[in-house]
Amino acid sequence: MRHGFDIGNYDEAFLLDALGRNVGSGPAGSGWAAVEGLIEGLEGEGADGSTLVQAKSLADSLNIGYSEFFREVLGFACLETLVLPELFARRRQGSARGEIRIWSAACAAGQEAYSLAILCEEQARLEENPSGYRIFATDVDEGRIEEARRGLYSRESLRRLSLGRLEDFFAPAGKAFSVLPRLRERVEFSRFDLVSDPGTCPPASIYGHFDLVLCANMLFYYRPEIRARVLSRVASCLAPGAYLLTGAVEREIAVQYGFVEAFPASAIFRLSA
Image 1 (cartoon, rainbow, N blue to C red):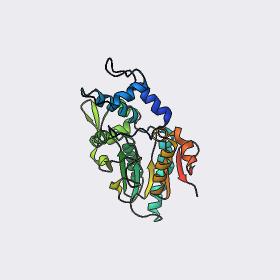
Image 2 (image 1 turned 135 degrees about the horizontal axis):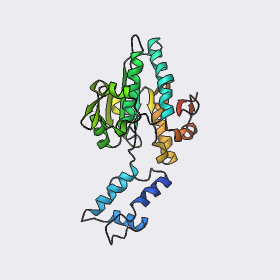
Image 3 (image 1 turned 180 degrees about the vertical axis):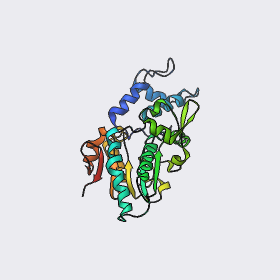
Image 4 (image 1 turned 120 degrees about the vertical axis):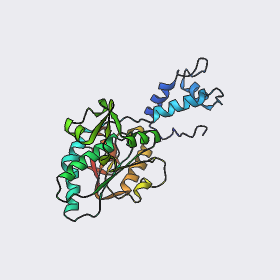
């Protein structure tokens, strides 16, 4: 209540680990040598600013923002060879209308969203009359959203990209690489909290109706009832025949909440009938 940050949604083991990482990091004499002391410190007034610093440290420990390009190797391979060709074929054959709509939830600094855009661009090149597509990418952290919009990445962070993709979709920018404008314009970044914001999908998408949603490597941080809430919201904004990609370690979670794996061990799901 004091800091406007609800830690009650997190999985207990993950929460205790985050609390443990913050224990003992307060100033000398603060009494933050145990979780109880940390809590007492966070409840204090903190006239010297230490309380706010410690609260931000704890919040940062809980708000995991790590990602990388093509992180889910098997999942992205299935997207490239099976899912995206199918989605484009539906449009080509007239069995679906409009643009292909994709949502990258918990997109961190944009690596996942741009990975998707690369695959869509490559698939579009194979089409005689390629369908349009749009990617909506969201994250709870406004700072990471700003990073994503800039589209500037170190060489190390692009290690999963082939040389061809690096040359095709990025331009050197000093010691880093910048996502080319033609790729950036395909992705719309906005802040959205999948856990607590109102609505089932980001307002930028207007009505959801996504052909593909990526909600990877964030479910296992939350309590079971929060996982159920998140997956229920995702399910409600899927178009008929749409797909969901989770993290590989979250496959059992998706199955528990009514999703069926579309391809073995891929972490790509469809809603059960």
